Image (cartoon, rainbow, N blue to C red; front, side):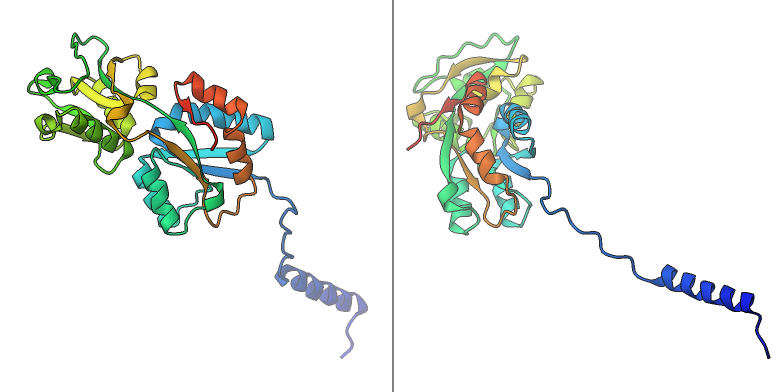
Length: 267
């Protein structure tokens, strides 16, 4: 049986169209140089200052940066479990040591960045007056209420316990605590009037208008407050080292000072 030429052509075109429709699409090539980005896990007490530092870093380097804040203990455990952090800034050496022992930071990148002071705070309208000294009547000042401070495994909570122990008043208040997830949460307890007193970092108290500083604890009453920084092992971020370098520089240090942090001299 003869087939008309036009019909043959239509059949051929239909077959070609079908092959094109079912053929796999070619893979889209990844950019040769994907945009740099860096994720920073930082102690909650750094929140306000670090947000400003990140903005300055991104503006200066055109690099996307973001931060996750929380208790140093919680952040360290998240990194241990594989959370996608590129840089870690702890509020004490212990939690950085925790990751170092597990090979989860780049040891050569570690350095001490900042320090801080410990403050006793009260709601802004509180009339409490208390001189911070050995044997101070802290329990009497609390009355029937509680003292706000961070949890026992959180740096701010450990610094507070150490200081109160040194001053000889820990045993009088240890059963009357309002434990918070981190220093910022302890600050919120006092700011909302839920507790009459709390212990937080000096830098936290400075940025909250709803509290006032009753007094600063002697630095000698607790281990030195230190904020170490390090690059997380296995990071794929090309910007991690640049971020660490930036936060050690004059521009970032000026921001930290503005928020009340003490710059740790390089060793």
